[in-house]
Length: 207
Image (cartoon, rainbow, N blue to C red; front, side, top):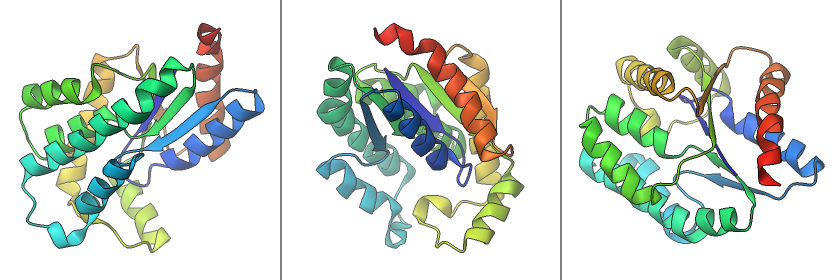
């Protein structure tokens, strides 16, 4: 079974992934945690290139293909074998990030992005995608409070991230069976409980 977590920067998805993984482990489930881009030696090398602020001249098309290359390696090398073993895969970002950031955010043709996504994933999609939604201002406030240095992908302006967030919400509206939209301004434990209720209800499908 495959779950992905999505959202704009600082939405809290990484925290929720850890909480869900711990809960599943307590329930005697085998869990594989992954992040995108990354998760394999090749994918991690691509990640370094993508996030390095020395590469500000990277074209939007190059960015799209690099993300997709990292994903194709991850799916082939890790995700497909894990799912075949009935391992629960939880991924911090997946294909919807490319649609949101490179499609809606960068303005690349959505049809082309969708085709490339399908090729890179071998047609594999998560059973459920948890979209933790926060406002752009909330993202900026959390980023300022964290005092963490931003990477190349986090350098976009408010207009860029507004397009990304709007893209996520539009995707969620079109794929209601897969997406679960969660208010990211709620208490951490409240969000976790909301996610766990969804996961707990579909775990029997693994039996």
